[in-house]
Image 1 (cartoon, rainbow, N blue to C red):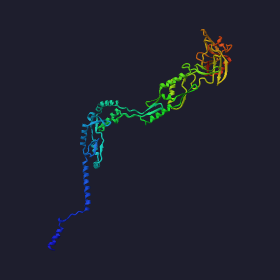
Image 2: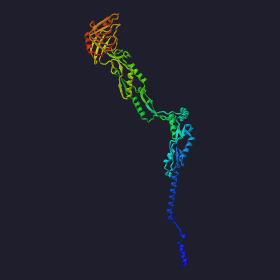
Image 3: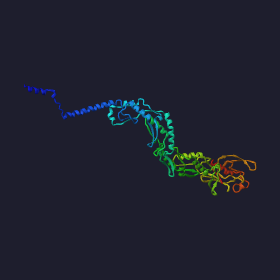
Image 4: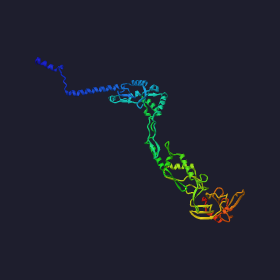
Length: 484
């Protein structure tokens, strides 16, 4: 081989002459690998960096601590609470600004900040670059005694402020001509001092630096949507429209709904009736209808045998309304809300739930000196009689047989100071002063003017003995005796 050929072969084999040629295909593989390696290095670097530091968009109670370790974050918070003021706003406008120190607020973290940092996922730092994290923690302590002392003048100012503001009102039931309606609640702008006090404590303990007064307005305790209020409205209007009646002496007396509406009251969430107005109404019933001679003694209309319709004064047979008892009973019936007809609670030998004088009674006609016994509307017995002499007249009135005795001894005063004592076979007492119906075998005649001719009784109704026997057998206790 020639020297030249050997030289050329040597040149071809020499490393210095080796060429590293990369084509496009090779680059498309290499570049992504490099990028991935760089990103991995950056991710590793970030993970290590944020191992003891808060991620970039982290804040504690609104104060940014991104990139700070626990110690520096605590220092930042210390400076914040040492130098910052607490702001009280009123409808968005600053009303008061008070240093935290005056409010008894001090930073008191314990291990909270360090614990929060440990709980942070430092390997999630790329996500944290785009996502804000505001950690809420109680990092302060509040001296409640100092806070309360500081708040006293503020409470006074709020009280003064409230005097000029619109008060809050609950929805309420109001009476109108048409009935009860719900009046809508009113949202005022007065501050609820107790709620404001609680809000101050909670806000300071939670590390916040601002409080809005309008968050502590008095709120209506009852609104138009309150179920109980709606039920009370329905109940009141139902009661106001109730068909309420009295049955007295055979008469039906309606209580007007306008009157019941006037009585109705709604106070402290309770439905009731005006006690004074109820008492006045029941008293008026007593004044107009009581038939007892011991109270208002209203006379009775009576269809007499010979004189037609007459008026007879009250006597022993009657009743009087027990006003206090009747007021309470009427009240309960009305509040029950259902239609009712009642008779009043009374005192006396008879009740008010039926006509005072029915179809069975004894009639004594003084002018005609005659007596009838009606049973179920028909005359069963009638007779002439002798009644009280002048000066010892038989007392007119609606009386009743309250006692019967056979035989009986009558005792009394003759009017001249002497006493009398007479035995009779049949005695029926009709009043409380010794007047009654009895046999009188000493009378030789009955009726006419016999009672004026010196043969008149001491007030009793002298009856022929045979008729007296019949009367005694047939007339029952409690039978009305109408003397007119």
